[in-house]
Amino acid sequence: MTSELTFSGEEWRGFFAPYTDIVLVANNDEVDAEELASTFPETTLFIFFNKVYKVLRAPFRRPALLACRSGTMGANVVHRREVADVLGYFDPASFLGVVNVAIMATERFSPTEAFGGVPVRHLHLGQMILGYYPKDKFPTTGFGLCMWLQSLDLPAQVHLAGFSSKRSERWKVFDVHDWTFEQVLLRLLSREGKFRIIGGAPENPYLSIATHFPQFSTTDIALTADEVLSERMLGLSSIVDRLMSVTKVLRFFDNSFRRIRPKTRKQKFLSKSQTDAPPPSP
Image (cartoon, rainbow, N blue to C red; front, side):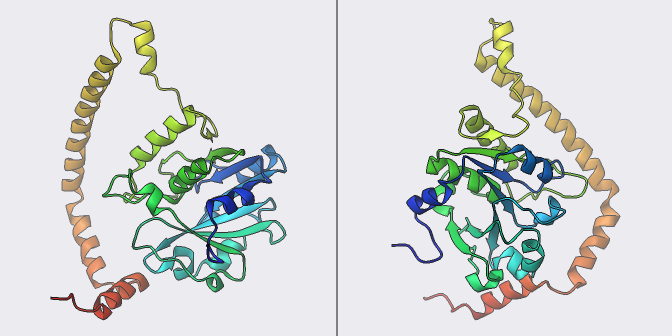
């Protein structure tokens, strides 16, 4: 039996049943939400993530969900007090509510009343994702939802908008995620037809080498590509070493400032949690 805030797989399939298309919209400068809305049919559901002001400029008037990722203090938009801001970008007449997503064991859901009265569902994806994801990194929310949607085996076509993992001029990508792993798996699954990457995943140019030069096996091509990439990474490392030397003074001042500035709410929360934790049993 599921709680009021949790759907079973069958309930989710029923929820998505009215839609012929599901578009996952990443927070990426390359995304044009208005163009997406005008391109897809009325039977489309759009799923946005967290800080939607990165891609929306006005209230979105198509059926939409907002996926809100949780952290150790609950949903990030809740503890950062951004709920009213992000919900303001959706038309209440077409907005279907929030999916509070957790993946890591330390991530905590926020209560439904913290989301301003909109419908809320909780979705924990750890059991499905963490078995194969690199253990020293955190899966992105978008990647988690992609894997989850394809596991539901929905009749709707799933589309990915802005899933490039590229840093833009305004928004950075966080090093806590394994972007390379995610891109590899997303491209493999898209080429298998599990979902469509809007704009198209670029064709792998190395596949054409074996066609035009049959004397080289795919193993020869892969090993040589690894060799070239390794040499290029070594060259990049030497440049980074020089940059580290040039910026030594700047990093000293930055580190000094970080030590003296007040703790964030999250740091205070984690510090208090460690203080309040019971001592380990002997």
